[in-house]
Image 1 (tube, helix red, strand yellow):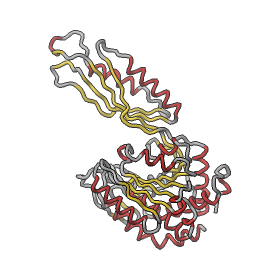
Image 2 (tube, one colour):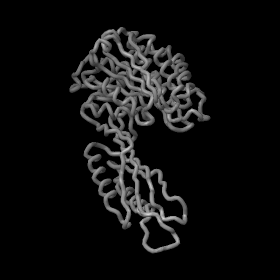
Image 3 (tube, helix red, strand yellow):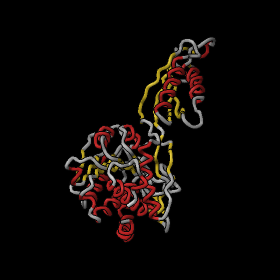
Image 4 (cartoon, one colour):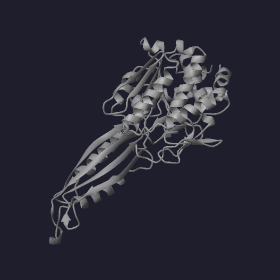
Length: 393
């Protein structure tokens, strides 16, 4: 089985790189609906070449999204869900638009995060189609267009399609040592608003300065960092209308991460305490959650799914380390459903969210082969994830 997968995929390396170039050269920043709609059309066309049911889902305020299914999945059978996003962090007016390659690497916007992952998923499924396995395995592919801005529009759809699935595979980029992701911290995006009383700065004396109170709260908030379970960053502050006016209003944007649900509860208690305790008389504060994703703990189900994937990698001749990442992805939502999920199955690379973003070219087909073998092994052994050592094919 593994030799057959490799012998099928290896001659398609240049074809896969051509698809990657086409995807990367479509400007698809999260707010660029025309570009994202082009991406959806491209992905629908590619998936429609070997999957029987492919739909473009229209969205008025976001880029269109793509849902593709094998026949068993279209008939309602629960199975394996593959998830990848088509948007990038680069806005429509970016100067970082070109795809380029050298003998070892490919460069370009989204090449690692995560258009390379979309290519991996496509060629893994092509390998399974070549083997005739897609006729029996219920596989659903979801390509969303708003992951980099929180997946607010796509989250209900992703959760609906993943609920009750045997497993989900997510194609964010792989780690530097070929790592895949078995856990992720959760995240809260928060806005802290402090109100005081305006006045003339020249009068002196006691003043209910919103900025001064915010400064005290920033120090208290940053003290919540514990080095591992909780990470918190105050990344943006605004306030006041001029240097000669006591500021009546000040705000701060916060990013908070937590390792597990217990960490989230502790973080929320500490945040509430800091917000409720003013140091400057006459000031008050409120904290608003603007966005968030639940934690993705390294659960037993995730670790069993990882063990299946690792067994396939070892048959291919290499080890597959696991990783706990601080960054979030759509895998966080899926894990919140209690579904086994493995992330980081995209190509190996680095420097995403910058104009130096790259992948290692050889990792495209390597990850495609790994994914194909993992899907086959997982389905071959059904729901018996309790004995992953038996899931080598």
